[in-house]
Image (cartoon, rainbow, N blue to C red):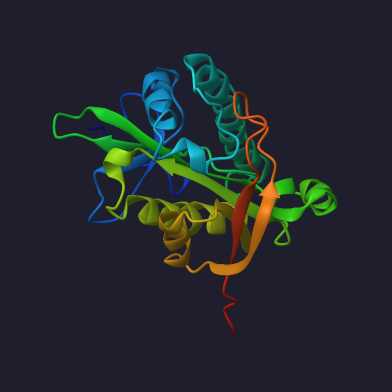
Length: 251
């Protein structure tokens, strides 16, 4: 596959010389997994993953059945967000005279891909970090959170993720969450606090976050009404809430 160093404003992202696409690489033993921006060609792989009964019931916002139009809509939104962060990186750097790396309001890469020996890159999942919203914080706190300026250490972030069942149980998502937090969210977003909500009983997801230093805060029984297309009227979802806080470094 392409390898390359990035322009300074993209640090610590690397950039593929032939395509210009930025990416992060997972640490060993998962060096064949990279995190890139979303691609329009991901539709089929996304539909396959989010149609699998080992995945979709644990994700409250995923429609069922999950159709190509759902993936196309999500990819359009995700690509726009990614492009906006990339512009924010460049403009912020230029506005600081090309000498200081700015904090930005998101991560431009979140699509997980396995790089095969022949160079083929196969979409295997997603790991996104966004501002915490109603589900993690409640309505009023979410409004306050949304109004905080980029770089504010008081912003509460949230992570959403899923992985193709073919790659479950290999430690990939644990490494991806660590990479997103420590390679990007801390140095480029000034992230100090992250909340996540996982479906009650999803012990694999809970373990992923606990291995990354998250602490179980509470379990909310029958908390979330499912409104995703095709799933209306189903039983409410119980959630585990976990939190990560950045350790303070004492002088």
